[in-house]
Image: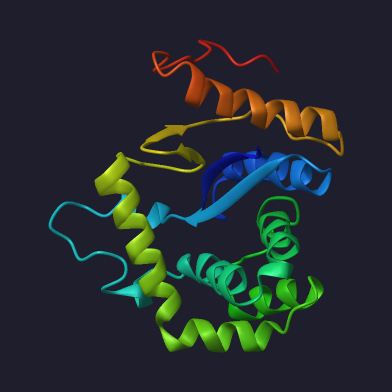
Length: 200
């Protein structure tokens, strides 16, 4: 029976990039996982109390664009989601491209085998923003999720910072994610485990 879990993303976060590379490479390498990819807004987590939510004034938050494009690809072009998902993370974190810019996002999606302009046209229809709003608010209200990447199984969620990337090693990718999910499901008593210093 496959291992089922969900994992949140926001393309701005380097730790989300690390975790999602492990997940994506693990899946590509045959890991027996059923994964649900959940969008989350880091912009919304920084909105001051009493201020309008980002989905009420999206024009103020250019950083939403890549996430909204990711939602379109996930929901309309699921066969190409993994490639586009990795490409958007790569553009932001490895290539230093500004994924707040429409042309940049369109070019990244074109490079991943999609029609970038068509994806952005779907973003402009507004429904991806509603999906982001509903997913984000549900995760916060139901599970207390506060950041990315958060791994979710059942009614539990855990925020994880992985310090390494798989670097093309399938065993590393699969072992890493299996360990995260095993801790989440098998040892819920472990609430926090954080190194005082990060070896460099």
